[in-house]
Image (cartoon, rainbow, N blue to C red; front, side, top):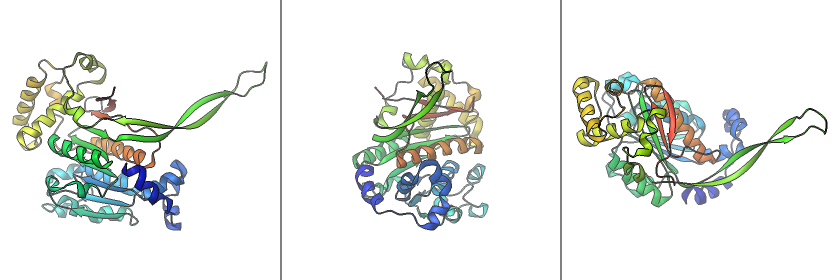
Length: 339
């Protein structure tokens, strides 16, 4: 696998400079020198430079990776200014990836940052093979499935993510992923006949976990009885995700605030066709326009955190679908295709 073979060769010859040790001192204290070295060799693709893409980009650049490729073939619109802080207001009408370069590079001059404006549909395995982690934001299910398949063949870690209004998700397609997890145990340190005292002992344990492909989400039955029983606990987030992705596939766009009432009606129609009498209310459908900064901050922060976990191989990444509920403003993880 790419991150199990090529990474070791790269890490072996990596030494942080004095400037890097000083800049990343706080992070090194948090997750250790070896983890920072792994980050220093990582090449990351972030496709889709809307507000969510900007949030992920910021966090990944600040973590101290080797290279970040910003990819987008869309132009900056007024809607982007709800949450896209890397593109200036003067960049309206310019390409989003290119408009984000100046502020992105100012975040961390030690990271190699460049832009690509070619349509995602024209990118093949040679392009994706340059990266250790591929993050795709704002794409159709058909495109996400195509790219996940390429990444699985190449051994590249894959994340699909998106935010609509106050709702967001990410799906982790990591194939076989190995990581180190600290197992906490409590050791009795008191002597006989004394009040019992415990000492916390942390033991690093190597684990390996299989992450199913993106096709498992596409095949997931949202009407299955065992999932319907979870709706009261978690809310209808998965139904909402399926409705939004169907809207995008059908109309080749996302719900737009300029056609709000008409688009809510279209969303209701898709909802009723997919899940008759569902718990997904029309009020919730009204929370799905533009990308709202608080939701972008949460989902983008979670995605960046998961990328850092994957690269450093410290702690277990979410397995495998993260949902941010717009009604409760809370996130939860659902296991899809996991047996």
